[in-house]
Amino acid sequence: DTAVSQTPKYLVTQMGNDKSIKCEQNLGHDTMYWYKQDSKKFLKIMFSYNNKELIINETVPNRFSPKSPDKAHLNLHINSLELGDSAVYFCASSQVGQGAFLGEAFFGQGTRLTVV
Amino acid sequence: QKEVEQNSGPLSVPEGAIASLNCTYSDRVSQSFFWYRQYSGKSPELIMSIYSNGDKEDGRFTAQLNKASQYVSLLIRDSQPSDSATYLCAVNEKNNNAGNMLTFGGGTRLMVKP
Image (cartoon, rainbow over all chains, first blue to last red; front, side):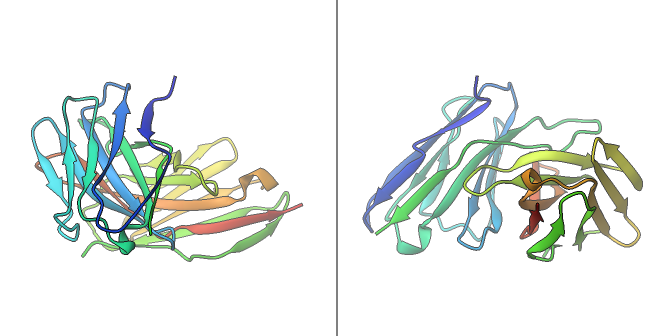
């Protein structure tokens, strides 16, 4: 049973289109994230979200927006796609709280987005 | 700006040798440190976490943390070809408002040759 699942695994689309990537976690975690991994394999945080607050990496264009219908889901919407948006997008989740395990994140399998 | 630095490699070691992976970070208030392994085309997988100065051992893996030097390392003993992957160092950038946002290094590619 997959802990963090995201769909689709591959997404090829044309410039200017709007697309969404879905993410679901069944770990009962209270915080979910979106990361972008570019061609150089650098993994960068885009958003951190729990049911109380959304934290946005200031470098993320406002064409990107997370949508959370409930605690177990965090979808990523991208408007007006550009060539530079091509990357692998990872959803992740963790349990925020006290104790020694702050920050452990569990990742989905990734969505390879190709903008042509 | 908080940064996590790693040598991109590749680091090539013979099978059975010890692989040593290093990471430095810039934020002195960082609290938690993690090593993730990522196989090509796969998602990052947590293999070690460390929170206090010193060594932490788990099987063939040992994580070492020196907060004074802002340095964390990962040792892999008896390296196997299956250990060939990219190893990502991650640091907890705790945000007081919501969540814990991990800052990742660029990763070190490890190649274990039979």
